[in-house]
Image (cartoon, rainbow, N blue to C red; front, side, top):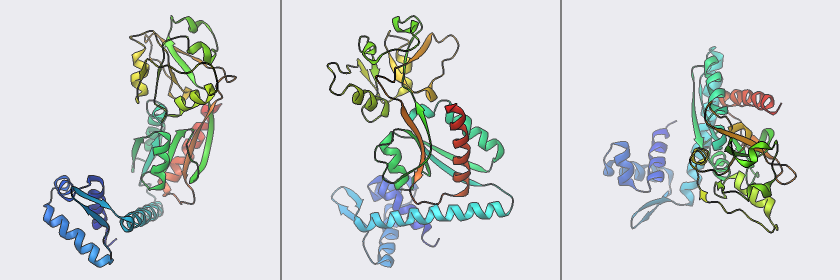
Length: 299
């Protein structure tokens, strides 16, 4: 607790990469911030920043220190949640990293339902690709991750998993709209828009076509699934999404069809936390509510 404000200063400098820029962001003078950092380093016994010609960055000692601070803050939040429960209040803060597919419909509904029961709980929702979501867990930037097909899984404890079949999104008048299920090779016959390989849907499709005579040739690549979905309102092309992210407003003129799992196996939508971590109470309880919602969704 004694060094909590010091940690806020250290994190600000770490993110800004510059004492002067961090000082501007925190509305203090650069000299005052520099003195605070130097005083902490003297107490700590080691320098934590490497001074560069144009800014600063954490050295290995600083990286270890920041990880320690984040662990301690996580433990403090857990204890605060326990104390709040003793007084009959449910308070806390939940941070969750999620795939873009969860952001339009599924997660807003679950957060709103939880807050209706526990209005003292606040949330931070971070949109991340699958690798960045795992990194968020490791660095204590997020308590939970809800992502399609995580990359490494080394420090990822799975709390729930549901299969997700990739769908092709198209106009209602598209030639493939008359089929109940389509083959992956059929998608390649039409203009298609895709996310980058950092995203699970693109990675799954590339893996499915590995060694095949044909490959993906997107006319548009984007890091925004919203952009890709709306783009096909203006060009008769295909975009792709998993069911949890699908919903078409009345009159949109859009529909979707599942791609055969013979060509493209279903991916796993996973809810997870960092291995070995004890979550704060609010985060643990919210995770339980997500597990129930995901089971219903799977049905």
